[in-house]
Structures are given as structure tokens and as C-alpha cells.
Image (tube, rainbow, N blue to C red):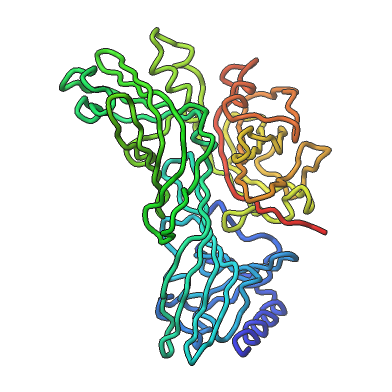
Length: 453
């Protein structure tokens, strides 16, 4: 265990010297938590060329956490405590170089098994991936495993496959999608109803009947296009010189490692695929209502929505590598996150609002009005308007901060007892004081359930 001893000696020396070093490569909105002890930091090298005997070239930040004790390797992956440090294992730098892709938001190495049989050494690694989300509405996470084989002094990737693939369908229920189109591109849906050479705006509305979405049963679990099992319906609108509409049913879809989702929508005339996040862009229900209304709807067109509000930056020292600290959870301390944001000219109050994005009812976890441009970690608790996350599985939570011209007074919001989406929150802030919202900022991170005995 020479490598491990060297790390801890270095760590003790660093602690004695008080050298708390900032981890390089962190984004401006995600900084290391206060309980970070030290960083083993030396010159960077090409991760693919580093091996077990070149430990001095690894850049690692040790995170001291009572329950899961992870560290972050080069801001590329989180390495859990269960992923033990053995001399025989495939080195983390090689694993990260082979498995990590730009389309992953996060990668977490959870465990691995080293086996030596007849002189052949293999390392089977279990890991979790949070994919990028081009559609902005349907995040994906998957569990996978990879097998590395030792060839002489080098480790090489032998195979990899996924074991579980989850898609967050709630963001798709009742959603609307848009793109520019002409009659030739939509003929399979509308038949001859739309005149030839017509050009216009195409809108697709998914009804709230997406009762299941996820990977269909399949024997092939390699990383390629993956079939989605689903069943829902909706309406397709084409708005040119005239408005045309047709109902559709969807019976199949496909996703892939880059996070793209495609559905095959069928009407009585034919079928065509819809690629969310690439060909089609998500639009808000308010935008869709304004565009598709048979009469001029000035109220809908002029309604204040999130996309019409100026923005500012929000950061948090309680978020690291895309996750809230464990102590943020309601059952693990209920410590409200630290927040800092840009000062907004003309603002007298800032409204803080935290919701669960994955529960379908937008559960309200935090609401308060503050005067300053920051709140300290632990400044709020259950008695002052904060109840931390407590999901049974990883969920995402967004914190919004709205800069207000005037105090709104009591809005009657009930933390941990109410669901409220962002549009309703905007409407509530503006109800008695139109134009009160100046700008807003937001920050999103995951929270994983940690059980405390």
C-alpha cells in the first residue's frame, strides 16, 4: 500500500502547514465545501499516459465526509469510499480517460472488483453517469460497468455496458416543442391537408399522459441507441397562412449516450421522428398559448415568463461537483446552503425559492425574503422557512433568487407542504405589484439520499 501511505503522509504535511489549496478546474458556480482538508496537487500530465507508478502526477482533492468520503479526480469524476485504493486496480487516471465523455455532466466511480486468474488481471468497475440534457426537459442517469484488463504494465478497456437507464419523464408531460418547417417536412403527418410549398411554424404538444418512459427490455446493453418504452399522445400544429392541426400517438422512442431523445409520432396519415433538443426546441406553455390562440391574446403574449427576465449569477459553497452537501438534507442536519449572488441595482429585497424538480408537483423546500446579496450556510432552518431535501433516490433541486424593487409582504407560501412551479411563483411575486421583478439568478444541483441511523 505504498501509494496510499505516500498520499496520507503528504496530506498530514499539508494539514500541518495549513496549505488549503483551491482545486483547479472548478466552475465559478461550484466551489469546494468548507470541510475540504487538503489537495494533493502536482503538475498535470496526460491522464491516458499515467500509470500506477506515476502517482506524483495525479491531481486529487480529498473530501472529508463522515458517510461517503469521496474525492474528485481532476474534476472529471467523483470517487466514492467503496472504490478502494488497491495496488492491483486500474489507475483512476486511466479509467477517467477511457470512460469520461464531454456529454456526461457527472461520472461517479462507485465500486470495483479486481480479479487475478491464471496470470490474467481484470478490474470490473461499477459507475454511474449523469448525462447532459440537450432537450432541457428530460434528464437521464444510468448505471454501468466496465472491464479493464492488464496488458503488461498497461491497463486497457476491454468492455463496458449499462445495467440501468433512467429518464426523468415529468419534464415532458404537458410540454410544447417548436421548429420552423415546410410542407415537405410534415407531409407524413398532415398528408395533403397542408398546401405544397407552404412554410410556417410547427408546434408539438405532449399531453400529460406519459405514464411510462424508460428503457425498454432489450438484450443489447452496449452503449449505442437505446430503445425507450413509452405510450402517450398529443397534437401537432402547423401555422402558416392558415393553422392546421392533427392528433398523434407515440408508441416508441430512442435515446443515446449523448442524452438526445427521439420519438416516433404517428398520425392517421403516417409517421415521423421528433428529435428533442436538436431539431426541436422547448417552449413554455405561455409561449405556445400565445402562438396558437385563434384570437389575438395580448395577455398571454405580454405575460412575464422566466425567459423574459434579465439574469444574474448565483454561486454556492454548499455545492460541489453538481451535488448539495450531505448536511443539506432534512434528515442529515437540515443545513441551508450558502448562497452568494450579484448585487442588483434598484433591488430592495431578494426572494429565495427552492423546489424539487423531479417529484412532479414541484415541492417547495425553501422560501424567504432577504436584504443582502448572500446568505450564510445554516442561516435557515425549519422554523425560518427551510426544509432540506429528503428523496429516496437522487433528485435535482433548483434555487431561484429574484431581485425585487419592493417587499412583497407575506405571500402565504407553505414550505414542505406545498407544490409550486416557477411560473406560479413569478405570478405570485407580480400579483399585487406588476413590474416588481427586476432580474433573477438560479443554481441547480442533485441531492442523494443518505440514511442516518
